[in-house]
Length: 152
Image (cartoon, rainbow, N blue to C red):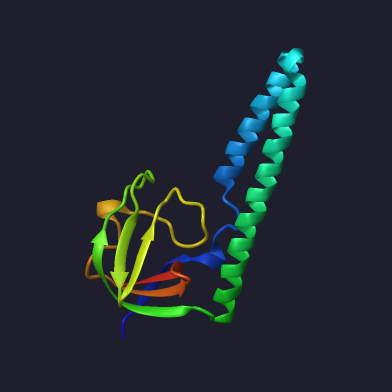
């Protein structure tokens, strides 16, 4: 019997990408600093800060809803079980400039480390644990990898 190790499980990941929240927070801090230092531009900076806060809230809610939908389906077992050997592996760029992709049992997966969506996005590049010939088990939800297990 083949032993598998879980390398990714959506249930163990964060619902909201904190990197995005930090970018919004930095932008808001800059706008508030401008509002304090330039009284003549205070109204514009406050308005832009309010818009940035609204966008941050919208983005966080959207990410949470996407995550929760996938999490619920994973918990209920409402996913496609894909079991097979990786083929057609194309290494990606860990910096997020190029996607990583591969096929397993007729299912094609492609993902970017920089894309904000729930599911496996850990681009390994040429030296990672994913490559042609590796046996994997995948919990597939609408083409996204909700759980990834690799044979030892």
